Image 1 (tube, one colour):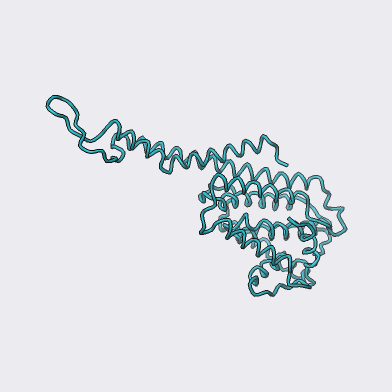
Image 2 (cartoon, rainbow, N blue to C red):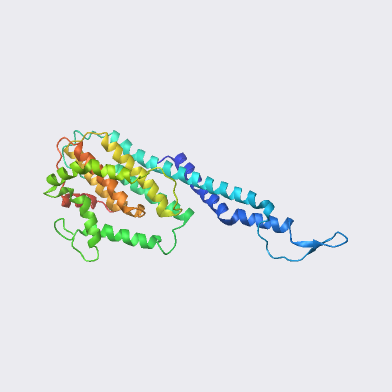
Length: 319
C-alpha cells in the first residue's frame, strides 16, 4: 500500500493544480476587471475638479493592467501544469514501484508450475487506481455527460462481461453486441492457443520492428498532460506504469511458470485496467503486447497458457 505521507503529498499537488487552473481560467481576469472598475471608472471631471461617473458598466481590464493580468494568468496556468505533471509522475512511479517491488521478491526462473492467480501487486494496483479515479472525479470532475463516467463504465462493464462469459466453452467469442470486444480479448489472450508457438515465432521476428514503430511515432511517457480531466490524467499514469513494467520484464529471465504469470497479469491489466486508459487504447495494447513478447523472448522454456485457463484464473476472484 502507498504510504500516507505520499498519498497526502500527491493529493495536495492535485488539489493545488486545480486551484491554479481555476485562477487562470477567469478568476484572475475577473479580479483585474474589478480593480479596473474600482480605481479607473470611466467619467469626466467638472470645473470644480469633482469626478462625475458616466457609466457603471463593467469595463474590460484597462491597458495599464493588461500586461500584469496576462502575466499572472500565464503564471497560474504554468504552475497548474507543473503541479499536475508532478501528480501524474509521482502516482505513476508509486504504482510502478508496487509492481517492481513484488517482482524483486519473486524468482521467475524457478517457477515451473502454471500460475494459480493474478499477482498480488496487480490486485493492489487495481485498488489504488480506483482510489485515484475517485479523487480525480472529486477534484477535476468527470468531463460531463458527453464522455462521462456512466458511459465509460458501461463500456468497461461490457468488455469485462464479454471476457467473463467468453462465449461458453472454448476460447471463441462470437457474440453480436460484443464482437469488437471479443476480438480485442483474443488479441492478447490468444497467446494460449494451440498454434501460439508459431505465432510467437512470427511475433518474435517482428518485435524489434514493432518497438521501432512505437518510437518512430514519438510516444512520450513523461509528457505534459493537456487533457485536464479524469481520462487524460489517468492515461498519463497508466503509461508510466506499463512502460516501467515493460522495462522491468526486459531485465529478467523467466522459467515457464514465470512467463505464464506475465501472460495472466497482462491479460488482467488489459481487461480490468482498460477504463483507466480510454484516451489511447492502441498504446495500451501495444505496451501490454510488448511485455508479453519480451517475456517470451526472455523465457528459457516458453509454453503459453490456454485461453480457457487464463479466463478461469482472472475470473476466479470477483472485483
